[in-house]
Length: 115
Image (cartoon, rainbow, N blue to C red):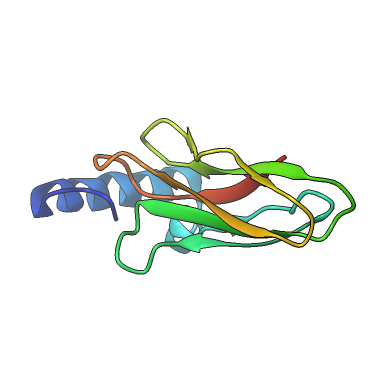
């Protein structure tokens, strides 16, 4: 969770619980990070930072036949979505793009790699 204080966390839990009942959506699906398809020619691993649940990354290797540019895209729940830095990889090279959801949000809901 990216909230800064316990009182915000309690409020968010109450709101999410109410929304869960109203929408009949299980609470676990509201917090799961959904990986998306990787662009052709790239082999990527995505995830959240070990210490900071608001920071997501895409670590990619170019297995294609030409140089490729990619970046990570985070869906940040209550906060605006964010894109990481654009990374250009030559053949057989690896690189990482990172992005950070705002601290008042609900955290990362989805991580994708954009071409």
